[in-house]
Amino acid sequence: MTQAESLSANAVTGVDVDYETISGGTGNMLMVGTSGTAVVYSDRV
Image (cartoon, rainbow, N blue to C red; front, side, top):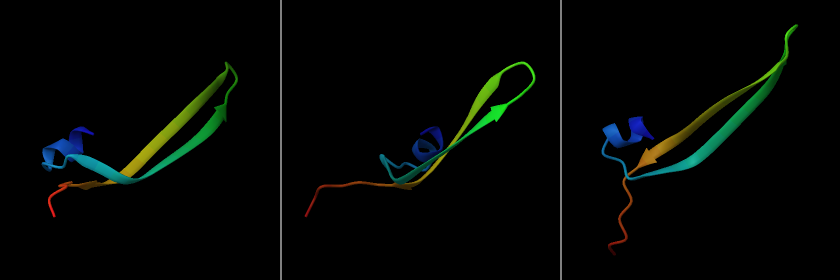
């Protein structure tokens, strides 16, 4: 959200969440990545 705010956006749309489980010798880890499109929303007609 910080990158969207730096672009003066007030909303993020088209959010995509990807995740993957990684198994290692000492345990498991969950990797999560997200992306979306920063937009400026206005309800004025």
